[in-house]
Length: 288
Image (cartoon, rainbow, N blue to C red; front, side):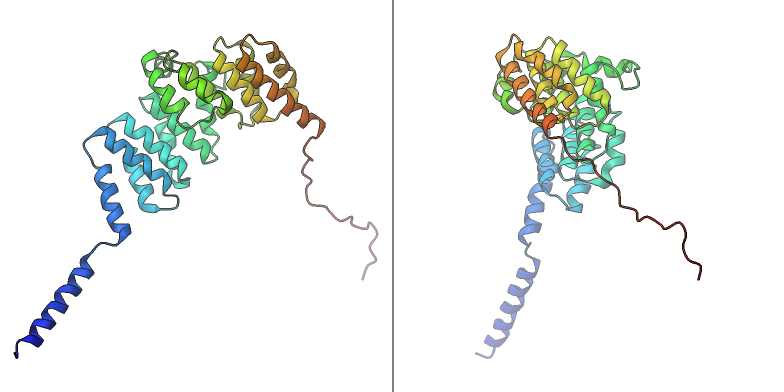
């Protein structure tokens, strides 16, 4: 009978230590996610890294994505770059810029898009090169870069990962998805055009306009007209008008939307920003 108090104290102590050692929901979740981040299965590791993009403002997630950016598999590195862009990891700019020199074009494009999401215009250079075949400086692409972009098997994969993965196609989304199984490069070029819509450089506007008029792929032309609408440059309305007679219906629809959008911009231009008003200073101030 005298042992009962000691037994009760023992049980209390054990229960308390167990509750103290138990993981919090957050810790338990990280345990699960870490099991995916370190999984030897590439597909599982890639999916786990992709989920990091949802954890905006979480330093642990950013560190995990930066670690994945050095993975030996390009699929993982590409998704890591994408995640860093989605979580707006501004401190990752140096690593993403370095990833632009990756040997795998999927990683290069993902890093470029991430930089665009972070407000770094360096990323636009890559998409300009994809759409035009040369850099903004007028120089040709490096041999290695051109080789990657000319690889049909590589572009077929990029159609899903890059073209349809993180760049919206608006009204041509479903058709693009169906077409990509037959066409290797259209989705990537279309993605480049849509991305360049936000680039303020006039050269990008010219590149989009040229793609709208000259590209042989209807999906690229449709995306280019979508990009013209998004860009909102009324000086390019004449280009959009040419698309109204395109041989492809979906291109015509995209061009029509661009014409309407640019007409609105033309009729109601955004007011120019005025600098701070300066007060006039009297010339002949009385001396005190």
